[in-house]
Amino acid sequence: MSASARLSIRGLGKRFPLRTDGGGVRTAQVLQGVDLDVRESEFVSIIGASGSGKTTLLRIVAGLERADEGTVTIDGRVVKGPGQDRSMVFQSINLFPFPPRSQPFPAGAGRRFCGGFLSRSAIN
Image 1 (cartoon, rainbow, N blue to C red):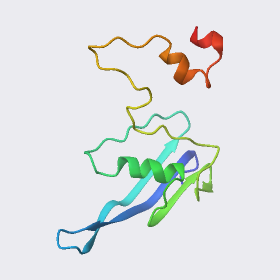
Image 2 (tube, rainbow, N blue to C red; image 1 turned 180 degrees about the vertical axis):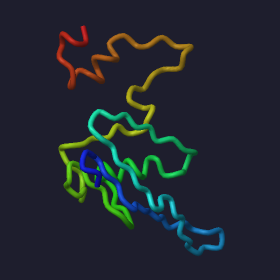
Image 3 (tube, rainbow, N blue to C red; image 1 turned 90 degrees about the horizontal axis):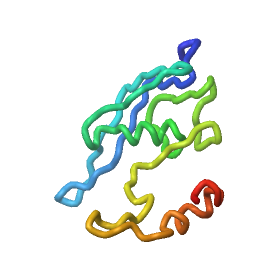
C-alpha cells in the first residue's frame, strides 16, 4: 500500500463458474491482477465493457463479495466484509416506479415512496 493511499487493491482476482451448453461447468476469470491506489480527495472512474468486472470490483471493495486472490485495504485495514466506513449505490432504475412519459406522474407519489426517509418539510 502506498503511504498516502486510503484504498489499496493488490493482485485482486475473481472467477465465476459458468455452465456450458453441454451441461458442464467452466470458469470465467473476471478480474485478474488488479492493482489500484486511491488517495485522499482523488476521484476515480472505472470504465469498461458490460461484463468486464466493474461492479464485481466495487462489490469486493464494499465487502459484499470475496475475491479469489489479492487484498483490499481501506485506511490500512483489510476488507473482510461490509463495514460502516463504506457504502454502495446499486445499479437499478427502479428506485421509483415512474409511469411511461405518456402518463402524468401520480400526485403524492413522492410522499408515498419517500415519506419514511425524508422529513415532511423536505418533501413539501
